[in-house]
Length: 240
Image (cartoon, rainbow, N blue to C red):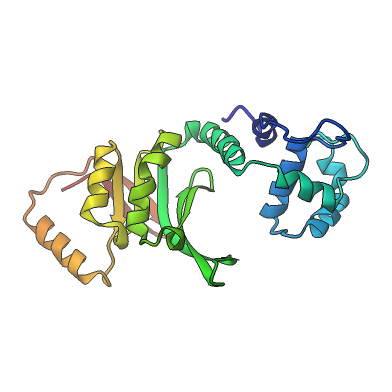
């Protein structure tokens, strides 16, 4: 169980505002905005209306002492002074605390973000590192910004990701990540990988079938049985 709340993590952010005229807590405004983003609110006026409706539940937990939420102008001016790097560092600290009891498994996959556009007006294609236990993205990078493909992008950021979240030890992904330079780097970082190969990856599938056909059969390291309706489906773990 993690020991700190998200608000606690953001309370450590340095308030960049002048002390004169401050009426609302900096960390409260940041978390309020983050909650709005999770609710898919992208306009400040809409955020204020949403906060006003739920102010009875938001005011005390977020550290506000006024009867009304900050206005849209106050939120905008406050966020304009917030350091993106400091915000990411505080969020990473909180996520790392949340991951302390996780199994250390994360999935990598590329998705097109229709809500964001690049400088040419095209939807952003992002590579995401997603932790299932936490139901959260712990890493996200744009393939367009770095002008490369998903496996190379992961290779560029793998060390950074593992340094931030050293408890992550198993990477899962589809066949596009089954590339020697990437898997060699994963092994060099003392991590494991599990990559799904489908029938539409003909060359890779044929190579795997040829390789494993010549391997010596060994009993699995572990075996369980999952109930699927009236049938039982065996699940094995290990190698052959």
